[in-house]
Length: 194
Image (tube, rainbow, N blue to C red):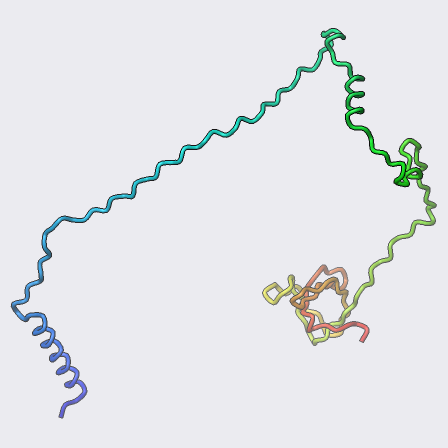
């Protein structure tokens, strides 16, 4: 009898009629807000800063004028007397029982150390670690990751020098024939001794 389309139309018509009756129908007038004073928000008073007590005056350090060549010798301080007064004020500690009698003497000159030229040898060269490309054709990249550009592709079995390895599993290698530096995944190489 009723189709889905008719059912929807009748439902919306009923909901419209229900809303019209519930809102007051044709005699509906919106409620007027009473006129009254508007509340004003006053800003909070700013607190007055606390009085700061003056700090104690720091002692002033003034430099004493240096004696010039023009002042006579009677007004200039006696430097030897000052040195004697300082020595008496701070006597040197007694280190006789400390076993320092045979310690280095700073008054005697030290003989230069002589080394024969044949005794000088070069430091041993670090061991070179060689690795072999394990795949058929392996991309060598400009940095440690697949997001870096491919520099060259090496064939399987190529032996190269490994320089370092990262925590993420990428090996820095020296390319054959002085081709520079590249990076390869550690999963794509094996020790050359195998």
